[in-house]
Image 1 (tube, rainbow, N blue to C red):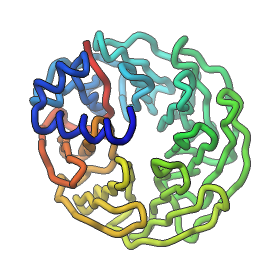
Image 2 (image 1 turned 90 degrees about the vertical axis):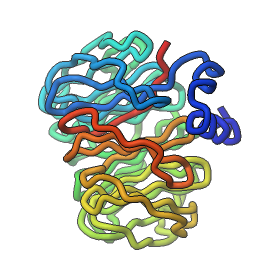
Image 3 (image 1 turned 180 degrees about the vertical axis):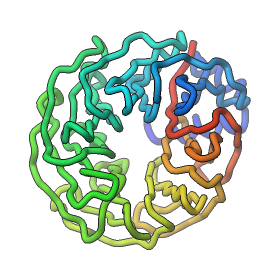
Amino acid sequence: MNRRQLLVAGLGLVVAPRAFAGTVGGTPLALVTADLESHVVAVELASGRVLRRVPTIAGPRSIERVGASSALVAHTSEGAVSLVDGRRLRVRRVVGGFAEPRYTALHPGGRVAYVTDSAAGGIVVVDVVHGEIIRRVPLGGPARHVSVAPQGTRLWVALGSKAEEVVALDVREAARPRILRRLRPPYLAHDVGFSPNGAEVWVTSGDRGTIGIYDARSYRVRRRLPADAPPQHVAFIGGRAYVASGDDGTLHVHRLDGHRLRSATVPVGSYNVQQGWGVVLNPSLEQGTLTVVDRTGSVVRRETVARSSHDACFVMSA
């Protein structure tokens, strides 16, 4: 799906959701972690209705789409990840062998995902088709947030929630990541996110109100932006960046040059942001809500789905 198709899709989902669902051959869903209740909540984006609560092992913490209709859930406390079938809304496989799995990035090739393992101090390469670990790459620190370039060439990993170092890796050979560079931002880093064209990486802060926009090739800071309370998280739709500050309960929309266009108020504790189908998901760890924001920054839906919701992603259901 190209950029124009993505924006049209997002408009259809918000303005005429029932008709839109029919045109794409399935039902767009949000899968939301219920961290304290050992399940993932499947929410129909068209209506906000909870379709099903998918039982999982304890502690579903982060969730990432790993295909049009699949998701990977990290259970940090259990040392395992679950692969969820979005069409059937069930767990198809649980993969152990982790210490503390945190966050996931899917390589654009679609077959392998990179799961950060903070206690093991590196990333784990997972074959999401067969549901098995194929490689471990030590990075020398508590790896957490991770982002892969849309071209499938580079992977950036923050080593901690207040990270002194960010590691850049070569992932052109998807199953064999290779360390290229270690960066030390002028603040403690938290989230990392490649811009849609892969030219820049936004590195948010875990200790102050600032964001650095890095050149992905030179590893130099192109510009610094003011931000709300740390930690901030970032996602992108087309030419816009969406920056959430869970402690302040805000979500700001920026142009890719950093200029702020609009702000929205979201429930306190709404830290992580995910994009898909032209809208942004912003779940609340503290209040268990799921906030849906359109590409302009307008809140179009807010539903309480669990006691605590750390993360969310998009999948297509049958």
